[in-house]
Structure formats: structure tokens, C-alpha cells
Amino acid sequence: MTGKQETVSLFKPKLGGADTGLQKELATGNESFFTTTPFDRKKRLTEIVAKSVLLLMTLLMVIPLILIVCYLLYKAFPVLSLDFLFTNPTRGMRAGGIWAALLGTMYLVVISLLVSAPIGVLAAIYLSEYAGDNWLTRIINLAVVNLAGVPSIVHALFGVGAFVLFARMGRSILAASLTLAIMTLPVIIAATNEALRAVPMAFREACWNVGATRWQTIRSIVLPNSISGILTGIILQVSRAAGETAPIMFTGAVFYKAISEGDPFAYGLFDQCMALSMHLFTISTQVPGVPEAVPYGTAVVLLGTVLLVNMLAIVLRMYLRSRKKW
Amino acid sequence: MRDDDKKIEISNLRVTYGEKEALKGISLDVYENEILSIIGPAQSGKTTLLKVINRTIDLVPDAKVQGTAKVDGENVRDVKSVYQLRRKIGMVFPLPVGLPLSIYDNVAFAPRAAGIRNRKDLDAIVEHCLQQAALWDEVKDRLDSLGTRLSGGQQQRLTIARALSHQPEILCLDEFSIAVDPVTTMRIEDVLKELRSQVTIILVTNLVQQARRLADRTAFLLNGELIEIDINEVIFSDSPANQMTYDYVSGTFG
Ligand SMILES: Nc1ncnc2c1ncn2[C@@H]1O[C@H](COP(=O)(O)OP(=O)(O)OP(=O)(O)O)[C@@H](O)[C@H]1O
Ligand SMILES: [Mg+2]
Image 1 (cartoon, chains in turn cyan, green):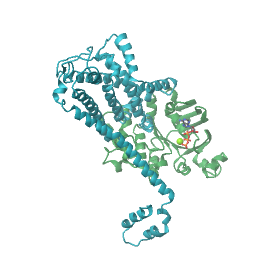
Image 2: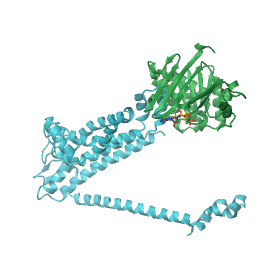
Image 3: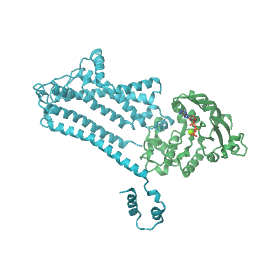
Image 4: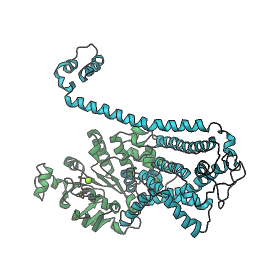
């Protein structure tokens, strides 16, 4: 169908039968307005091509993802049950569940975020709302951005040096959590900075003009309108902290540790712990004779946890967006 | 007009943004309960002057201020509380800014920031200011809806209501009619005429006729220099002191 036919068929029914001046105008006088030039046709073709390519890429990305999830679920099916979640591994990790690892990961993630989220958010507020634009803050901002891109094994080494050895925490949940916190901190700062910058400057100026202090402005205008972005940034770090092996391997996670089953307070701050990411690594590479379904089951739980948290982020974000007011 | 009627005294004020000199040493006084309008082409430093008076110029990183600006005889740079100074001055900038809050909270924002918590007092202030800004009748039934959802003209009146909400003694309006239709402009002008008995008004405007209609005196700024300041009868006569003033107000400038 050429462009011209299409526009005609679009306009006829709308105008109805009445022989108005407008219709005449459309039919005759303003012909050139509706005829497509070669340039228009080329634009449309480009549009179609662009849309198709983008759609194709989206499918290319989504299909493997779905396949992976299905494959994991299929392979893990024999072990998936509540018991799998709430019992310790047994028989040299060849049977039983993943309770010790699941709980360990939760400890690590929660403690690390309890440390990094407040520090990160407050530091970002200082950097973007209070600190002036001078060489010092520029260096700090540059450092933050670069730290966000440092490989996690480097954070691991720092964690060993700073927490395990220097601060004498030993290999413990605390040392591992702090290492994870160091790893997530720069990303949280960067994400919070982004979210704060997205609040229009005019709002702040309007507040300052009526005699509000910086803090009053931040509390009543800036934070309520950036909180969804800030929370998203934090929650995305949950999946990162849960998934990384390197930072915890040398600072507090162990291959095997039995804890009392079903007791959420089974670990202490200075205990060593198991963790899902490391457990998965162990049973799939270090222990011979593990039934195939066990590592897949572990992977499903790890993936499920991450998906659950991301889902939470999306819902929270939608809720906060709906309350966003401009 | 006597000396002790001076609300604002500006002497030899010089403001630079980095290399750029925005005000090149100007001196002028504003008397109590007058409307002083400031006219001049773009970039002449009008907005900068207002920012010096309420010290929001502090918030521009590379701005440097020399000379003095006094409000009520007190140098703004030496005031005890800059927040108190800002509350003494109501500011309305060219583009209306409805804060992302309800209409009520928009107007109650400044009183709350000043520490007023009592709901009855806040109610009274909100109603009074919205009435002063000629907006009350349009919004009294939906005070809880968002200020940002109002039309542009309504938002500008909301901004004026907010500027009045901390009971300022001075009201500065910076090209308030830029985003407002002529009818609303006339309504706001009526509001200003009523307010003149209670507050001192500085009206920055690029509508020469608006200055002529409303002001007692008019100052003509050009490229950071004060060309002339005088009562309207002189500025808008056939023979102001400076030829450039005549050219500007009669529209043959440049
Ligand atoms: N934040 C800033 N940083 C750097 N230069 C600035 C800043 N604000 C204003 N200037 C410069 O100072 C000069 C005066 O600006 P100002 O905004 O006071 O002019 P104005 O008379 O209000 O103009 P307009 O009628 O366009 O609003 C301009 O040359 C402008 O480029
Ligand atoms: Mg201006």
C-alpha cells in the first residue's frame, strides 16, 4: 500500500458525507500536504527497519533468558521442595537441602546493605546537595564512578587486608558483609546521585526563595521525589551482593557448615557461613558425585531470590512513581 | 519621600559571574510602599539584582558580589539569619514553579519552614494568601490536588500566593507575566495595586507599558549599568534625562 492511498482511506470516513469546505480543501487544494514525497517514504522505510531490528534484538535477549530459566527449572525439578530450602546439606553435600547457604546469603546481603545503603545515600546527598563544585568534590565523584567499575576480586583483597587482618575480625560474616558493603557502596552513591539530579533545580530554588534551609528543602521536596530511584539503586545491589562469590570467599564464606535447621538466628556476626553463590560453585566443581539436580536446584533458588528482589524493586518503584508529583 | 522611608538601599553594587560582569556598580534606593519597576533589555542584570537582595546569589557558585545592599538599613551580607531575610522578601520568578505538593502544601510550605505547625493558623494563611493572589475561588474546592496540575496562569498565581505566604515586607516580581495570558496578567496587576499599601514592590518587567501602568518610579538598566531612575512622570515623558531611556520606552531602541 502506498502512502497516498493510506492517507485517503484514513480521512474519508472521518469527514463523513457532508460536502464541507474543509473536505474540498483536503481533497483538492491542499493536495501537497498529504501526498508523500520520496523523502517521506524513505523515512517510513527507515522507521520500519529500525523497529524490526530493535524488536529482533529484544527477542534475541529475551529468548535465551527464558530458555535458561526453563532449563534450570526442568533440571532442578526432582529436588525442588520446601524441605530443600530448610534442611542442611548432607552426605558430603550430595544430598539434603541448602538451608545453611540460603540463610548465610541472607545474612551477608542484609548486613552489607544495612551498612552501605545509609552511608551511600547520605554521602550522595552531601555530594550533590551540599558540596560545592570544586576540585575535591570532582575527584571524589570521579573516584566513586571508577570504584563502581572495579572488579569484585579487588574488593575481596581489600576486605582481607582491611577487615579480616587489620581490624582483626577474622574470616567472619561481619568481615564478608563489610567487604560486600565496600563493593556496593560506590554504585549506591552513583545511583542516588543520579536520582537526586533528576529533581529539577527550580524546585530547590523555589524553596530557598521562601526561606527554607537546604535540609528542609531536601526532606520535603528532593527526597520524596527521588526516593523511587534511590530505592531501585539500592535493591539492584541486593542481587549483586547475593550473586558475587569472590568478595566473600576469602573473607568469611566457607564450603560447609551445619547450622540448626529452620532457625533464622543460627548464625552469629563472627561466625563463618555458607552462601548460595559459593555453595553452587563448590558442588558443581569441587565435589564428585553430586546428583545433577542439586546444583540446579541451588541455582534456581539463587535466581529465584534475585528475581524476587527485583520484582519487589519494580513494585516498589511503581508504587512510589504513582505518588511522584510532577 | 524621606530618607527614613528607604526600604532598600543599594550602593555601588558590582556582581561578576566568573569573568562576566553582570552589574557594573549601580546605586539605587527603594522606598517603603512604592512600586519600583525595573526595565531593560535581556542580560542587563535585572534578575541578578533581585538575587542579591534576597541573597540567593550565594547559591550561584561562581558569583562575586561587591558593594552593599541594605534592607531596612541592614547590610544583607551581615544579617543574622539569611532565612529570616529571605522570608522578609517574596520572590516571583518568570516561570511559575508549582512545587510537587498539594495546593495547600504549596502555600503552607514557607510558614511550615518558619516553624508554624498549628493547623488553624496554616488554614488562615493559606486562604488569605490564595485570596490575595486571586486564586482562592478557583481552587478552594480542591486544595488537596496537586499544585503542578494547575494551568500555567494558575501556577503563577500559586507562586505569588507562596511568595506572600511568609508575610514579606518586600515583594519582587521578575517578569511574572511571561508565561501568563493577558487576562490573568491584568488580574495579577490588580492584585499588585491592592498590595501596594501593605508591601514594597519591585517589579522587573520587559513590558514597558506594564511599568508605566503600575509603577511609581522606574529604573532603566542596560548592560549592568543604571541608566536612569526617576518617577514615572519623568521616565515616560518626552524628556527623560537620558536619550537612551526615551528610545527604550518609546520602542525605538537599538
Ligand atoms: N548563573 C550565572 N552564571 C553565569 N552567568 C550568569 C548567571 N546568571 C546570569 N548570568 C549572566 O549575567 C548577565 C545578567 O543576567 P541577568 O539574568 O541578571 O539578566 P536579566 O536582565 O535578568 O535578563 P533577562 O531579561 O533575559 O531575564 C547575563 O549576561 C547572564 O549571561
Ligand atoms: Mg531575568
